[in-house]
Length: 362
Image (cartoon, rainbow, N blue to C red; front, side, top):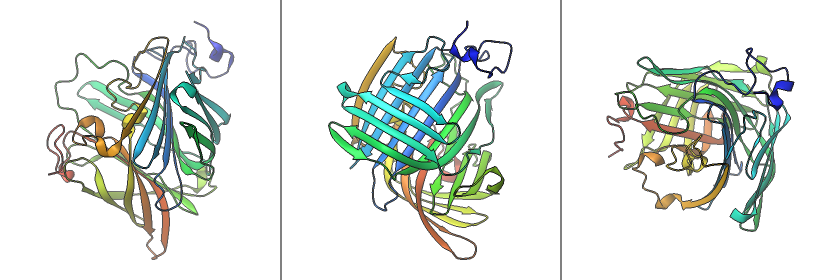
């Protein structure tokens, strides 16, 4: 099965590029978020684009959040085996300069959404540790990810109103490997699901801070890393930092009202100002979950107000909280920045007081 990718020296095995091992859950994904660096500005954009070789599907999601309202565009198409197909309906990704500059275009006038965005990294991407998680003998997750902070040039237009996002900052990542995608498993493991995730990329005037943690039900990390990267930094400039997080949870939810990250280089306090629902990017979506087959091509617009959602429902647990971030280092120097605090807590997590699959903070 020859495709365009076979004309590039990218093969990892004797197989054609169209074949990605033997696991039907293999995926290859782009993610972007962006926000103003002005304190109090709660506008936010987000984009996700996924390729699922074993399912022969590509999908994309584009979101614009402003004034408590989130507009979401979903698209999915058959891939035809082409790993270089960087388009799902009206959404297209272009790698302008690898590991530095990418362009996103959206042309969905029927849904009232168009955009032209260019992301440029401010430093070399960091490589996160390999994520491998098993439930008994079954592999649930096995993937890698690079993460990079940067800035945007361009615009997003919704219902005829154009929003200039030049000067927005944010984070993009690229991940690839195995995670649950497509149709749900008809024979899931005979245990309650458990997944606890925090991810907190932050932008400061002179540096970036990255920290994440996957915890088990006891609060023990099975994948955790922190990195400080100076603006304009190269791989040799990144510094690893250890840290722990404390969260205050809002009653009736699994969403944090505040968080404190204590790292080797001081204390970092997150004050959320808006909550972006990852549902808009397909995460946990009942219809537009990643890798779902919608036929040759399908697009759909979905709008909601965050305040109208029932936050006790599991599909609303996964959020990115746009936050004002205050970092006081060990010498007492204070840096003010912005970032997101991504949160997903499914199942038990003893430090947070969660004991069941979806109980919420009392």
